[in-house]
Image (cartoon, rainbow, N blue to C red; front, top):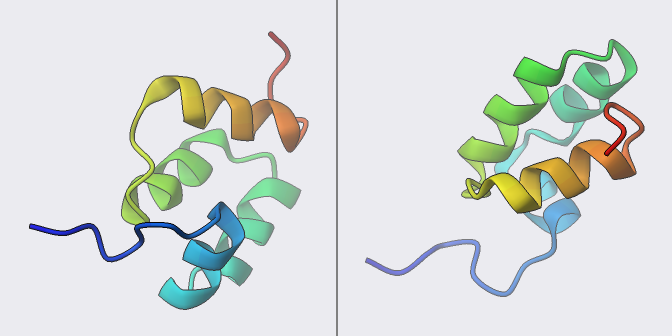
Length: 62
């Protein structure tokens, strides 16, 4: 099965999926669990990528 988000950036995936506002809200509220859940919904599932995004958004420090 082909990944429907193949070749898209994280922001593109969030926009196309309709989850960008929900993602931004979760980041603003510092809800790491919700951010992780949303990233999983747009087929970002590997821990290294998720941690990089969390770090970029200022939600964790590594």
